[in-house]
View 1 (spheres, rainbow, N blue to C red):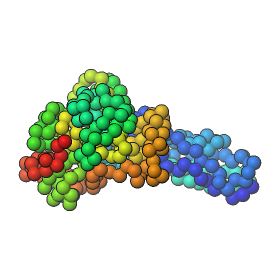
View 2 (tube, rainbow, N blue to C red; view 1 turned 90 degrees about the vertical axis):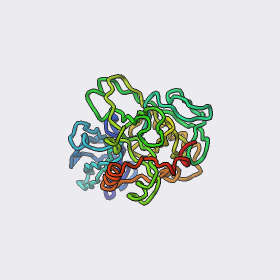
View 3 (cartoon, helix red, strand yellow; view 1 turned 90 degrees about the horizontal axis):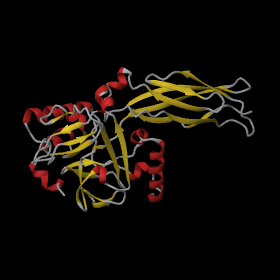
View 4 (cartoon, rainbow, N blue to C red; view 1 turned 135 degrees about the vertical axis):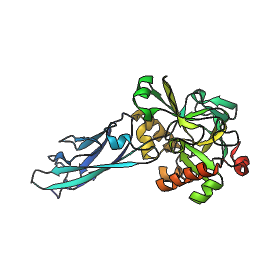
Length: 324
């Protein structure tokens, strides 16, 4: 029959509060052709969600428990890993085990009403369409390839503060930016530029999640009690665009961000990327547009630097570089 060996999809990614159940297919790669009598089970359960597996096909599923305290405390921009173990037994009594690793994270989006700089001037994000040309910091006008929408009810916003957007008040980033109050998801990264970033991160321009800026003057969690729509913008690469004049990121379609989207949206994006690909991988095509600090200690140091010095998040000497 051959030595049983588990192969197939051994990783997955999901986003907190997405409601998506992810799955993957495992196979016995040591199985001889014509034999299909392996049985599958979960031998070690997941910690932050529920893992199940079809006992005859080897298809596993993972349902994240959004109410788990550790998951609920996860800050967007950070990631959490969960692991469960699959056990396979063949008809001869031989077996194999395999760990399945799940990455839990979030994706970025603008709230409806946000005005984006385009070739036609300022346009509300919900009015943008595929093919519209968007102003980018590094490459001028670039075509919009995909727009995604996520609806969040008023009840959901009241019951779970992690779904609420971050309000960045007009001028809160410095130099009059944003020009109007801007609402983004907690995970959405804003481009920060100036000596404070250089001192802490060794780089003058960095992308920092909006939630990490909450508590600085003019930046707070929105207490909205109305239905809300979030919009994802995908370009040919990860870009810095301008929302209410403030530099901010487009969708970076890594595994975590893709996991947030429903299957139809993921299929649409993969089809678009396949048509545009020159043979390179998704990771090669979508490199982060700027440094994304991952060290929590450095992020806290940066906040203290801003609070103690009163320096703006966008310094005057860098303003000319950041305005279209």
